[in-house]
Image (cartoon, rainbow, N blue to C red; front, side, top):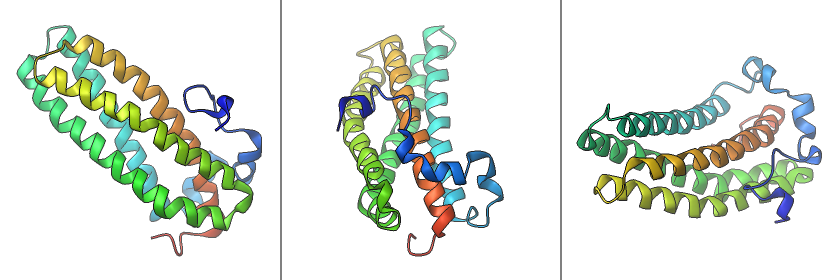
Length: 183
């Protein structure tokens, strides 16, 4: 992966990977005939990841401010954190092994984009590992919530960058070709 396209440094997809987005702009997605079903479900998964991260950050802030006791924070962190990790891992596996190859075959001009998204998933493995270690340290009382909250902020920025890029690459392909053969 070229350094300027690495997840940690890019600020969006290159124009060459946004060609279908011009024909299928985000603000028109929900009214497209191919939106209901797969696209709506897939975007809802992304929304769930974002909501879980927001809940984790809010709880960390409350714990830092002394408005959420350590035991309650640990219980919520365990529940929300494991839900986030498990669902992200499963989501990425399905994309890497099924959706990306199928969508890449439908739009070969965008194959580099699917390779980019796959490399994001590999780059995020380290983020997910740090997340798990940081969460476990807080849950076990070995760390204060402040450093974990800081880790969450960086994690959220990278995950959001990836999710936006993924949406802007994948949704237009599905809208154009329909969901047949993907589920």
